[in-house]
Amino acid sequence: MVECIRQLKNTFVLIPYPSDYNTEIIFPRQHLLRRKNRIVVFNDLQKFFEPGKDILKLIDKIKEQDWHILANCRTVEEWETVKRLWGISSNILEPIEIPEVDENFALQVAALNGIPLPSYFDRKNIGTIFVNLDEMRLRYNSKISNTQKQILIAIKKLLFVGVNNSKGEILLSSIKELTGLLPLQLTDPEWLDNLTGIIEKGFVSGSHLAVVPEQVYFDLIIEPQLSIGDIINDIIKISGENNRVLNKLIYSAETSEKAIDIIREFQKASIKLDVYHYNIAIAKQKSEREGKRLLDEMIKKGIPPDVVTYTTLIHLCKDYNLAVALKTEMIKKEIAPNVITYSTLINLCKDYNLAVSLKNEMIKKGIAPNVVTYTTLIHLCKDYNLAVALKTEMIKKGIMPDVVTYTTLIHLCKDYNLAVALKTEMIKKEITPDVVTYNTLIHLCKDYNLAVALKTEMIKKGITPDVVTYNTLIHLCKDYNLAVALKTEMIKKGITPDVVTYNTLLEKAENEGDTIKWIIEFCSTDLIPNARTAASLEKAIPLFVASSRLNEMFDMLLRFNPILFFSLISNFDIDIVSKFILEFPTEIKSTDFNKLGFVNYYLHQKRTDLAKNFLDIC
Image (cartoon, rainbow, N blue to C red; front, side, top):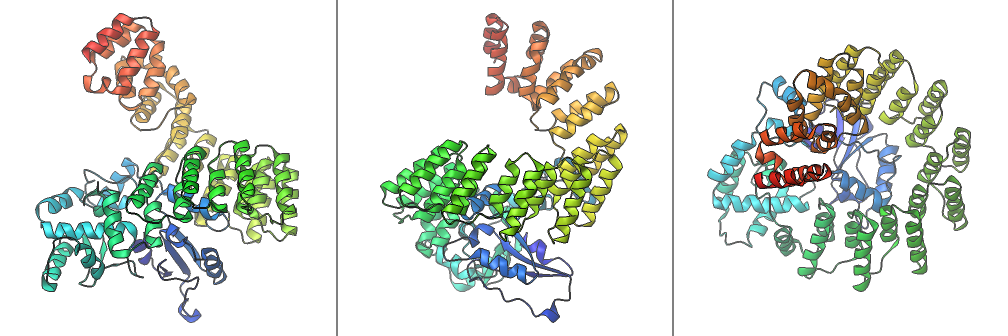
């Protein structure tokens, strides 16, 4: 991402690195800022949230200087971790998830650039369309020497934990230090020769002083199964028990299980764990019960929990009463709840009056509500006038509404003209509407042409429509061909249709051919069908029967949507289904899921003989 940002024309880009900032950024002098756009990039946002770093103060200073902020987290999970641990609200940073690359869109991108689509591309990284991974695998396996492989593995370990300089480069001195742990006795000229070979083969760019790795190659080609234990043991030998490095390791865990694995590896390496390590690991967990196990463990080890620990656990709760019990527990331990704790509790309770009592309680304790507290209350109240009164109250207290506040108000009002007036008001207050604001407005207006005008307006303001925008437009338009054109347009813009898109098109289809076409296309995706999809498919069954294409429908469903297949076959004569099963390829019908589905189907039909025959075949 950073390299893409650097290439922007008419843009001044500042890229501070977490290793060397102290809440200060040296901005260029005003006479140098004649170019319109000014962007500060926080690459790997989670690295900036470490003990002793006041990121919120830094963000305020950046906004005072009239710069835009672009922050990058590699995964949604990392963004959720940052939000849980430090209470990042939408008025500070608004999340935008980059969608996975749809294969049709990938083919279009490749064709526009005059290249074939590689045999493998990473759906989360459109850049891999331009990367020939097969060629690079061949180079790594046959043209990279064992010494060069050891150097590349060392670079991967350093890349994984973010051991780099202020420019984001990995210093050769760090690589030498790490490979020094291995039986590699290289002179300086030999080092230079090996590094030159690695650069020439395209795995890194740089010089004899520092290198910048090509992330995709290091993720997918160079030891993709490298164990966390190997990384931890080697990195600690050169960096010591550096908290920035250790925290980064936990942040980088892709799952809750891996976060715990890293904690266990720390323990094996006799690293002294602290509350920060455990807080990050707890934030990675899927449920309060999993997080509570880590809390119990840290208490047994004599590590006292803090307000972040308990607030994170409360965030993991699905049950309000359980969350209140945790709040009671933390108070007994003399850990005072803060505004984030209370805002999280308010978000969990479904009853507006109960939420108001929590707000009053926090005020009595001297804890001032913030924009998140009030916006959550506005979301909970069903009455528009009451929501406006809350907005007035927060302004009187010096708390300015944000884009989420206004969007929630727009959602609550049923009148389109009133919604437009709210949008005008927020713009006057220099609060920029986002894609959710516009989607809510489009949903409120009943006129298709007016909805298209809103879409045009949002694009002019630099706001990119998403799948919800297009789904609403497709729903509003009365002309079937226009609906199909909208679906084509969204794909060209890299927006992947979802189950709602296909459900709407199925319902709008004007003839048998179109209905069958959308079912075939839907079945070729990995989308999970819902009740609307099932209803459309049941209506379409006679069409497939009449056109002698029932086996084709069965084939598609079993290959791509087996859940839907098994929900539909009970509508058919058992002889028809059995004949299909006998003719279907064994490697697909004998997968664990499908085998269980067929056996259950036969048993439900009280045909244990057919169930036994099926198991014998498979």
